Image (cartoon, rainbow, N blue to C red; front, top):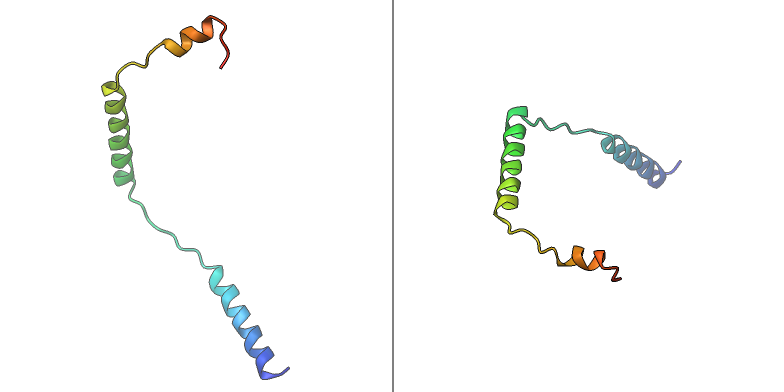
Length: 67
């Protein structure tokens, strides 16, 4: 085995070994729950602030018109 083949083999093995490393990130449960609650509150506020949608498309469907 020549030096170039050996270098290529060692490089491939090194890349394979480092590719299998798993990185675990710790997310504090309390912070995640607080963020989820904040998002849910924002969604409900947007929903309550939005005006009711017009009923015109539903009325057109009821009359048998096609889109």
